[in-house]
Amino acid sequence: MEITGRLTKDATVHKVSNDKQVVNFSIAINDSYKLKGSTEYKEIVTYIDCSYWISPKSADWLKKGALVQLYGRIGLSTYIGHDGSALGALTFHINNLKILVFAKKESEAQKADVTPKKQNQSEEPDDLPF
Image (cartoon, rainbow, N blue to C red; front, side):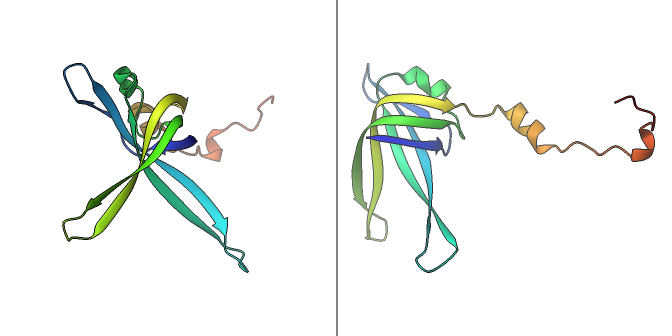
């Protein structure tokens, strides 16, 4: 199966045994559909918990906001909540992963948030050659 989504937070590496490590992260998949008889679109987000056993070094590149394409198999984890209700989570066991868009670095994200100040028109000369 193939899925594509954005990381919801930075990936983490967990040591399972002496020589086994797993990279865990969660992705969000956005979708929308048009309600029957309506002009409005309804947007839905599906969250999937992912595990990657092949290369723990990949966690260095799997940062919040990165767009990834994943190949593997999907599963369902079920459990009982604190209040006794039955809960479940989608899981994805990754065989192959591609990073389509790397996450912005913090300095780039801060620069993107700052809007440039408009210059006063009186400061610009009227006789520009272009």
